[in-house]
Length: 436
Ligand code: URA
Image (tube, rainbow, N blue to C red; front, side, top):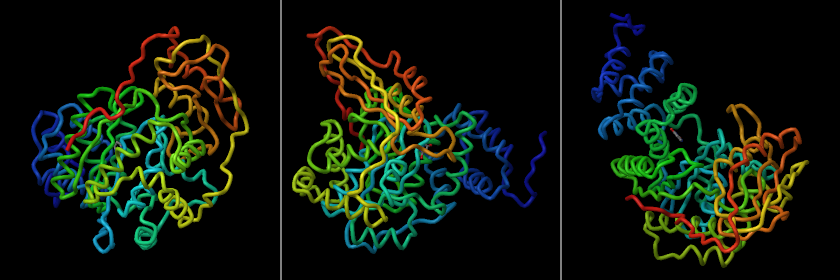
């Protein structure tokens, strides 16, 4: 018999809950409510919660357990309420990909269509970039807003991208940091409850999930991505949030850039009516889902890109948070061009290889307290299906620190294929499936 560290007034003990899940059982509502609350207030130790997280990763949870776990994480903090706003709300969450700058053009675009977008975002960890890191490349822009500032900006501009406050699902903050260092991030019940507890607590009326699939994504297989999407859609719907998910390809990076300032510049091109066709396609697909979820599918977002109103909303959104949308963006001090080794058709560009290269150049961070370089990243000059010529630029690597080039080059090794001119290339669909 193992001794429990909890005082006897506790209604369960951690070992009992761990053993129940270790042995393949289902946890009761009372056990779940207790363990999430007790962990948040420090009555369950990190080593106990990490053992439980591993048992969940190995033995899973059923839908009732996941929903209850999500509710318990929501109950650990505050809930926001946007019902006093004069417009409906819609939000988007991406499970993270390389070159995934879609939030930047999407939030102002949907705002320009009359739907408010409260986008509470995070910083990047690992090879996928963080939305706040990208926006912080804009001189003067600040991520931290009070709840009052957030509400006022949603009413006046219609779009806010800011840091999620500490009050939202604090249980998740603590648990996510623990999962990160105990090999338990990949459990679908824990990913789904982590994402959805924050989105439900945030109080959005409708939600579109962009669940990435492929080498550059959390979910490498379509089956696992579908399971995650279905779990999250069920959680959102059960909580009264209109929720749909798109499964989208992340075997190839999005657009032509991965980094911070360079992704802002590419997003501005999209808002100006140009930009890479895949970024435009995904921005419009997600905008249409957000508008439909908010009951505004009478509006065509493509028109709002074309007539400049999405760009106006972008500038207003950046200015409202202290940024200068017309200021020059930071430029990396050093650059290195990689040329195509042969002529032909680029038939593969691996998202993970590009993401790792950008990260090693300084665009991302290894630990959450690390700084990022605003100007660092990778620009690729061809996308799969494009013809390339031997000796012509294929990638430009950007960093403030030339000592980083070697490791970035190593990660691009084997990350692309060039096949003889005339090789047939059929692109995989960007939007693979819709769940909801
Ligand atoms: N993003 C989250 O917010 N939580 C997870 O568990 C994984 C990705």
